Amino acid sequence: MKWEFVIWHWVLTLLCGPIFFSIVKSLNDSNGGSFFSLLEIYPIMLFMGLAFSLPTYIFYSFVFNAIKNKSIKMIYRKMILIITVVTGIFITAALINGTWWFDIAISYSIASI
Image (cartoon, rainbow, N blue to C red; front, side):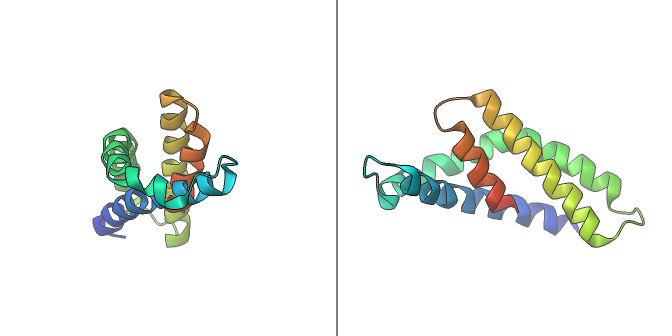
């Protein structure tokens, strides 16, 4: 397992999380909010996602470094890392709080998985 996995996992989670959030919000919104209107805030969500994900991915890097040379099957290593990220997403979203915190946590978790 290489560091490229860590970087690509982070980048793809940041890129896909806002899209999943837009889908979830447009499906749950009874006020007729559209998928495309939520995508208008995509650049803002990318920037905020990058800023708020730094602590999680710093911890993720430590976990990755600790398990990369262990004799653990690759699938279990990836599961450990994804569980670390999903836990970090929920903790960060809960600390931020707000109206959409749970939807944001679910969306970024789906993107991470």
